[in-house]
Image (tube, rainbow over all chains, first blue to last red; front, side):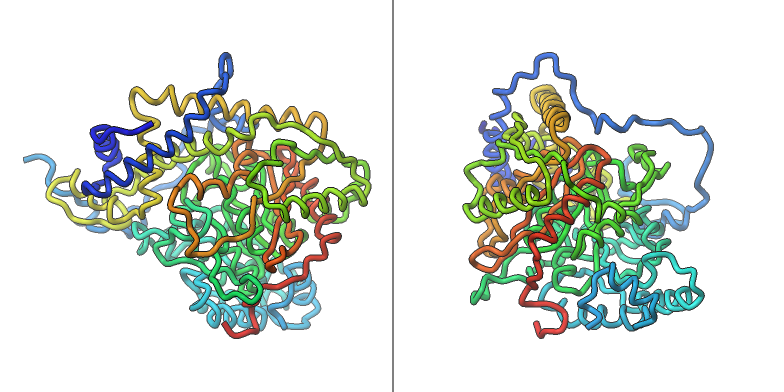
Length: 95
Length: 493
């Protein structure tokens, strides 16, 4: 299934990956060939088959709603590419 | 030489005081530093901290209350967060990331006394089958075709771990397996690789790729070593919501368990066209070895096998696109400045991720996007149910499955196919077990005519790694695989 350029650009935008025109074209063609290959799944009958959303042998558990960790602001900020005091910084969002 | 030892023999040697942990660790560090410029198996070698850990190990051994892995030199795949030690996932985006915390699996290995030699190379974010996508460069396999210096891939994604163990510059190493990333490099490098049942080892602190598939496991030079390492790595962890509360058995005790009467299934769908003749012949040998040990061998059917890989290449990219959304240049990792927030995200993620990772994020974004979710992602999850049922049905009739690990031997670093789908076919025999969450192990079985290793894969029931270990030991003894790669500790690179 060929992917049209507009869809490819929309997907790149959704994924927040900046691509130049040439990179976008390469990935558009490659994704098309992967989608062609994935197309083989059309022949599988999945009528009345439930989706597997994890390994069925592990059921999600709940835990007590209590604080188990925290007070580690310095640890958390230690890898920040840019910070101001105890805050992460980002480019100006609101004019 | 101390680098010749296995974990099993070194455990005994350390307790007999035949040598000290410091001697053992320094022999491995020396060999790693000598060979790594060529192999590139390690991204980071932690000589100083390894030396200090070895001295503590010697003190514990002198007191006589040392845990089992005390002083054992291990490589850690650079996907496990290690407190204070740079952890990169082989990506530019994490190339300066120093975790303030320790992953559960590595914490357990430290508790067991393990000494970390360093962080091993991998495909970027564990996405690849050849170790060709690392930001820190390709890993060269220590193996070469006889009389041919062409550099070969070690397999992937745990290729640095596999190369390090095969070259005797780590006694054992951790790997992670999402679609075959422990088993395929183990097969290519002639070592043992065990992917446990999903949920057996905690995922906490392991950098996520596809969270419903990712599972840590050991890579070693013997089945008994794998059993020992797995025993140290496994166990319930409340910090991983999918971690299993199943008790951890004594895996090592399964090494000498009889396999008489064990029912072995041969999945007929694995006799596919891509299988090389020599791999086919080794598979037949493996069947005979198990028969000779008293196993009952029969054909079984896993009818949805052919859909495994295509299903995987919907589910894994979908989960990867979600997991990797966190790399945005704000809280940690690379930031490439931009005039707006979106521009900063887009530049950061373009420059920070390599081509394969970007492609998978985009594929995953596409299959999860409005209008396509049902056609791709939901459909793939349903087919995953069918694949899982195939295994559950087969295990009504047999106790374990025997298959090849990979269709061929390792390929050349410069023989990489241009078509990503061709590359994905390396994982055709390993992906189905990952999809079902069942445990599987690769055991080295033979060398091919060119002198390269071929591996056989055993697949077991959920939480029955012990049968893999018992049957794996039989294959190991029968195969008598003692070959070593031409590059290993003690020879010049």
